[in-house]
Length: 291
Image 1 (cartoon, rainbow, N blue to C red):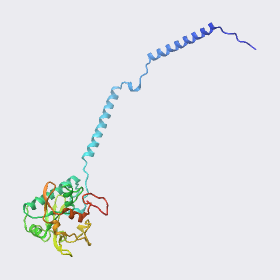
Image 2: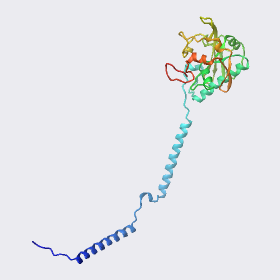
Image 3: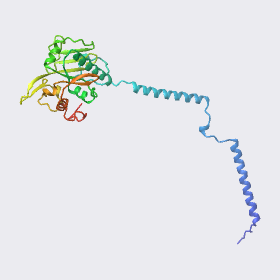
Image 4: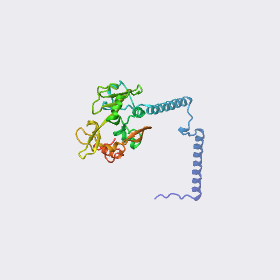
């Protein structure tokens, strides 16, 4: 067996010193290389002039696109479909487009013009159906309303038929069997209509005829027609809407779209008869719809 010679402590110390010197020399080489070629993070590199110009152009384009999108969304007109059942189609125009705000404005104009004109001539009327509902709820149109309704007594309607009224050119009053306000489309179920010729939107006029209930109560109601299909307490097909006369008279002032209009005196009973006891709350139940 070959025995290796033992190394002295001095020999080990010499080896350690040599390793330390080698490490120091290596560190000097690395340090010199680092100083000669410093490491730079890519994000710290200064952009060239062309790169700066390109970045500015891209930024401007992105901002312009964003502004254009916001402007388009903000200004795009959302056309609302007006069904033929809610307008006089003879006034429909090609490529017309009305948003809900414009429709509300036209209905508001119809209501204000009609009610103020009749009040000025002492012709009585009252807000009816959905129009009355809006007046009691908020004093304004119901959301997404497409028409208006008023009721009149026979005597008041006869006064209207015989009175020449000066409406603005924009509006047209049509009444059945009238020489002042001739119409080819009105009938006993819907004897009068006040129309906005710019859109064909309208205000319907219902004449309430007197009658007696089986127990002798004085009633008022229009001719039975499909116009009253929403009435929850009405009977017959088409439905016949008739209520006690003292639900309507004496008429009481009510506010509607910034004008002082007239409403039935017992409006709670009136609207409950039409829409049920929850008439103050909108319902989306198709079987119990309340506008």
